[in-house]
Length: 130
Image (cartoon, rainbow, N blue to C red; front, side, top):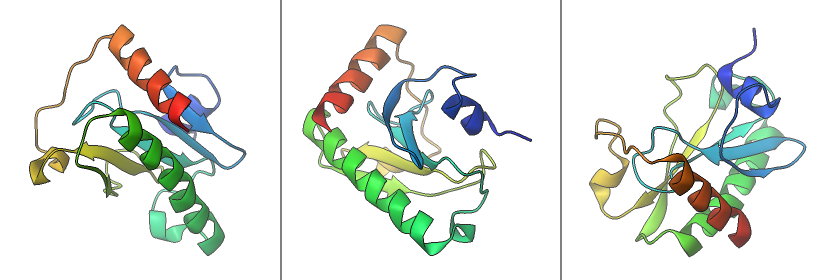
């Protein structure tokens, strides 16, 4: 069964795409903790990050690094944090969250509500910084 993330990769569900290559895909989280909160996934459907083969895991982190560096260039923040929870969607994903302080990456925080225009502007800014 296809996960929601696989449907996003296939274009069956719209997203605010940041970057893509043959193996990985990055897009804005629609329920962000902070402006610029991005999800990075492998295109292969694997639920648990540590079930990825070593090359795919390493490639995921290198792809995430490229995206995180772009986020840090365009989203005012102290740095970009990384979290892997893996309970929300049964498809491995990495959260890249702009940090202002330690509580910026607290998943119990109330999520931001951003309109489509703001999400598109953030996505475009990050894309242009890659």
